[in-house]
Structures are given as structure tokens and as C-alpha cells.
Image (tube, rainbow, N blue to C red; front, side, top):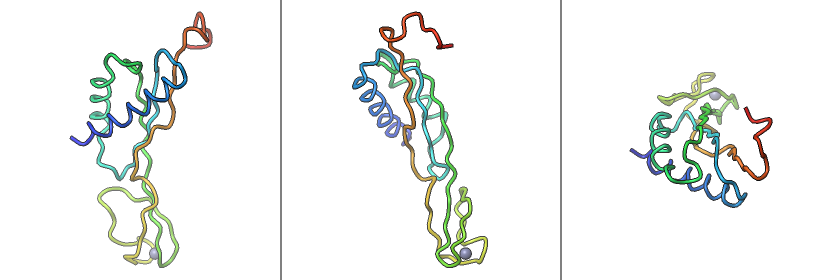
Length: 126
Ligand SMILES: [Zn+2]
């Protein structure tokens, strides 16, 4: 259930940014979730909906993008995609000396807000 903690962190980032911008409502949040994290999209959505109730982000659409993991071989310099379960060795030369360079993080990419004062009538907003 560690999605609860990450979702709380995501929501606090979103709300801080929205309040700083003077937004009235958050309409969408773009998230990047690394393929090597064990976060489950549906759990994040579930907690987000739960935790955002009564906040500026209530009802915001979550767009979750999966970021693939990339491994770099320290022996031959080759790079390759890494998906769980982790490869124990470089697929190119067989070396075990590999470094993972991405896919193990979760971050808020973008926050879309709506401000009735700035966009009366909502023109241009489908
Ligand atoms: Zn290699």
C-alpha cells in the first residue's frame, strides 16, 4: 500500500503549485511513473480520488505516463531497456556490471488548472 504515501506526496505538490498560481481548480495532472517502480496506476488513481476530495484537485484527471527503465553496461557501454523483473546481466556482452539510469522514479510532469477569472466562458477549453 505504498501508493498511499506517493499519492499524498503527489497531491501536496499539485496543491502547492495550484495555490501558488492562484488557481481555483486543478483539471488535470500529468504523472510520470517509472516502469521499475512497483506503483500500480489504479491504486494511485484510487488514492488520488480519495485524498483530493474537498481540495482544489477534486475531480482532476490523472494522466499517467509510464517511463521505461534504461540500463547502461559499464563494460561495453551499451544501453538497453530494462523491464521488471530486472535483468541480471547485459544482454549485449553478458557483463553483470550494469547501471540503471531511469524508470525508478515518480514525478509530477504537469498540472493543468482552471481559473474562471482568467478564462470567462471557457473559450478554447473543450
Ligand atoms: Zn555489455
